[in-house]
Image (cartoon, rainbow, N blue to C red; front, side):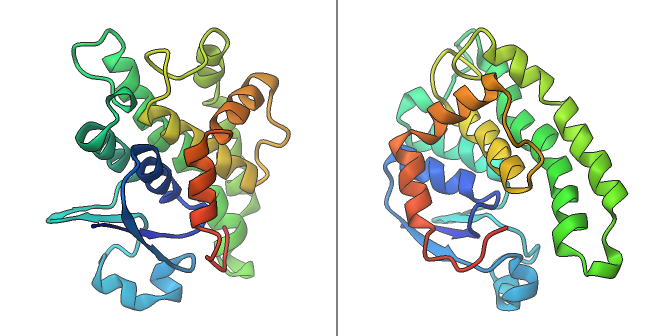
Length: 210
């Protein structure tokens, strides 16, 4: 049985959503955020103290975009993955990692310096700068969505899970409220998916949000 360590609406939501899209059975371990501070015994499972942690037999993974790719490629359905024989294989991989490395990374600094650090250590100027960085890098997504419904291969894939999570986090942090029309339409399509809703329901028992 696959086991996922997860904090409500954190990066691990990508993995939870993918598990639902793949129709897999799994055990969900809900943790308070951030677990390395609020549940230090979690460090015995993941010395980094980060989430997600996905355990599948001997496989242990902590990178959310990589988990999306792993689940899509290993368990399917095949439509979630874009193979190297398809024209948009490169676009798929690029979007998958763009969602994390380009869109989510700057938001983690906003989160840290507006909510996680003690009041005296918060840095509103730093947070504002990284929020602007994030907004500037949405240009590539808006350009793509102006003529496509999905980020790659003209179908829903693991890359959409990666990118959509970045929009979820932006809304939680009030960086991107309201969403521009193109992004709002995309968000509406993605968040209406049954697997997205099941993932949201699965995490409801978690007591804390970002």
